[in-house]
Image (cartoon, rainbow, N blue to C red; front, side):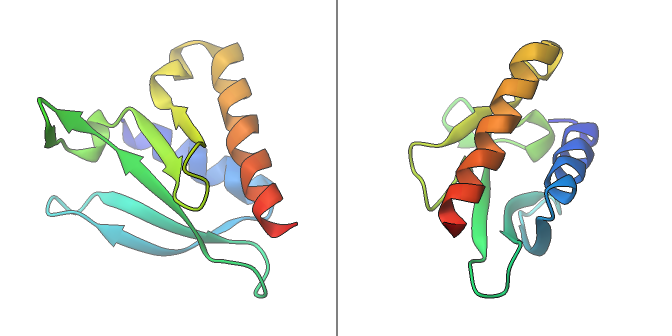
Length: 103
């Protein structure tokens, strides 16, 4: 996953008032988990970046997805960024899932 993906994801979260309040980094210094929160009384929730190369963790810039830890069934696939409509759809799904966690 290119840093542009991370920047765009952070920007889209910010547009809905979500903030990255914590970040766990891997050995290469890239984020592996973001803690996101909008309201102090809810969360933080965790966005886990997924990346594997032949069964082993790969650098995050090669990541293919983001999973919401608290909602195991909610993942987005970042390769869809190449398709603007698919990218918009999966980002909407991710943001809606985070909104539901606060409800």
